[in-house]
Length: 248
Image 1 (cartoon, rainbow, N blue to C red):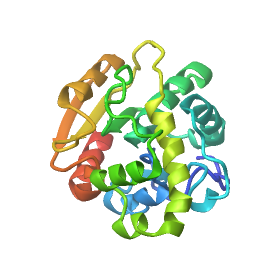
Image 2 (image 1 turned 45 degrees about the vertical axis):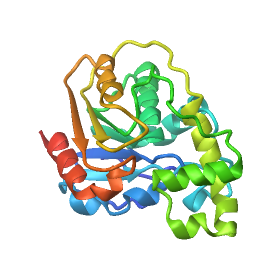
Image 3 (image 1 turned 180 degrees about the horizontal axis):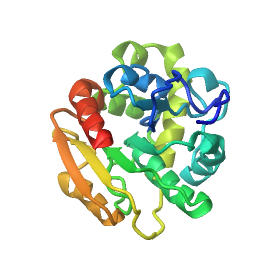
């Protein structure tokens, strides 16, 4: 295994000499690597969790967030290239799902590498337009939408100073997600697993099933109880499933 240098793109990383596979985790809009800080504790010991920290949040708060996925992917790929010395997998939720998919396609094209498994969650398949764009909403309307989705703590949504920091990040992330245009590509030669929330207003089961067209390998879909942020409320069940997928 190569000696890994400190990387601003990967936060909450713990060295793991037993690692046989690296799981790169991509957050949802407005989220940070903090979402995945405890995942290492609940996955098999041969899986090393590598949470992605995007500009504009966490330790990179002073950096300008990206507003388009192509530019973001082109920045991530060379930054993590040295970390691809082990087999690797991707997990992404919502915005993170499409970022991880596009990064997998970019790595295939530019580096001849692919994840051993692509796990996407809470987002319709790439060609399907976003059902309810929010990035251009007025501030009050955007805050109202965030309250309805339920992924942002109430104390943050009621704190003017916190909102001043958070809203530009969320708008940039929503812009990336909602203005994304899929360019037709050959299906990936890696399995794809999709997770969805049964009460998620942002996706339908049919839109999740459409991911099957993007792999030449196996495909599976599992629905969990919960809304768009079921990855938090159903975390134990989700991580158990991820662990099973990656050790088989």
